[in-house]
Amino acid sequence: MERRTHPMSGYLWKATVRNVNRALKEVNAFEWEGNYRFETRNKLKELLEDRMTTEVEQHLGREHYERRESGDKEDYRNGARFRHFLTELGDLILRIPRTRKGFISKVLEAYQRRSRSVDQLIMACFVLGMSTRKVSTALVSLLGERVSASTVSEVAKGLDQAVKRYHERKIEDGYRFLFFDGVVLKQRGAAKVQKKIILSVYGESWEGNREMIDFLLATSESQNAWEGFLRDLYERGLEGKRCEIITSDGGKGLRNALEVVYPRVVRQHCWAHKTRNVLDKVKKVDQEKVKKDLHRISHAKNRQVATQAYWSFCQKYQKLYPEAVKSLESEIDDLLSFYQVKLSPKEKRGLDAQELQRAQTALWRTIRTTNLIERAFREVKRRTRPMGVFGNRSSMERILYAVFFHLNSKGQEVPSFLFTQDA
Image 1: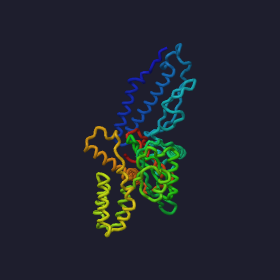
Image 2 (image 1 turned 30 degrees about the horizontal axis):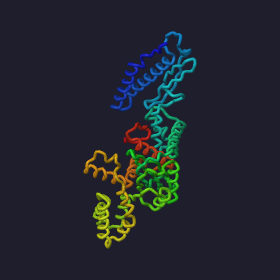
Image 3 (image 1 turned 120 degrees about the vertical axis):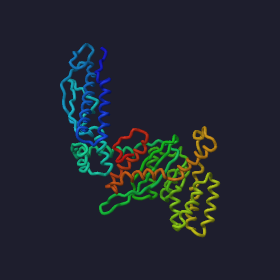
Image 4 (image 1 turned 30 degrees about the vertical axis):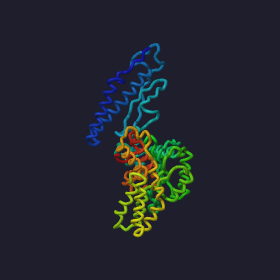
């Protein structure tokens, strides 16, 4: 027997979707109150119930009140049951059709009591570091219904599990450039605010895709701390076999750890860190002038010009600022490593001489600093500004994961629970 489709699966179904979308647009133009919220909630209820009716008819192979024929499933309608379903528009009481053999609708997952958008709201509150009790209270004004503390805890566990999977996942060894840096964030302690070190690694693949690969909350940037982090990355797959260069902040602990775990990969000392370090040894009145001379080295069009600029810098400031010159001199080889990296044949294809130079300059600009990591952490600080500091280690892990997941997923469909403000 040819399966018949209920009209709702065609034009009327699409029309209902359009009506809901139209209603939502109207609501967005006004405040979430009064008839707008009420009408939109009714449209959503109508949409879900009609869709479940269609599902049952497709399952049985016949419409309501139509007699069963040969070839139809040996199953029959068996009334309906009612279920509360919490959405961002408030609580819906849905009529869910039943059959004698226990048909389960796919519109609502089995035992699902909340829409995903509600779970996303709960997770957004947790990302902000709110307590279970405060989340429950805050959602009353948004949903018109109180969410129990047990429900909030259940949803939060889902985010914690996602963080755990992120830290334990296998890593594909396809990165062309790797960036390592340690960043300081503040966490509220029992008596005072404590500083926490976040060890982090960022990567760019040969296809040009960028992502925060992983991070670790640590107590220091010692060699032991960094080496433990790097070994874990290596064992999970990040062996650096295709990596052209590693850019790092230049701290002694990280530098020694990289020598142990990634001894064969070329290393680049971050120019941004080194510039700040050199300027700390210069009088404020001369800092702008010294900074420009440093830029003549780091922004030179090739290594030969950079080397000439370096010698000029040393001659110019040796007597005036010997400690600044010594700081630069001690790491000049690692500071100029990035000039070894050239455009790939694919990147060169179709470019004229001027375009090649611009592309090469852009590539060097990317790999001579750890600014990619610092930009990611600026986003973390921007999103947590209303909090001031993190409440505890778990809230710190959640917000870091959430922001990095968002940044890693740019251009893709990203769960909104990860965001506390507009991106």
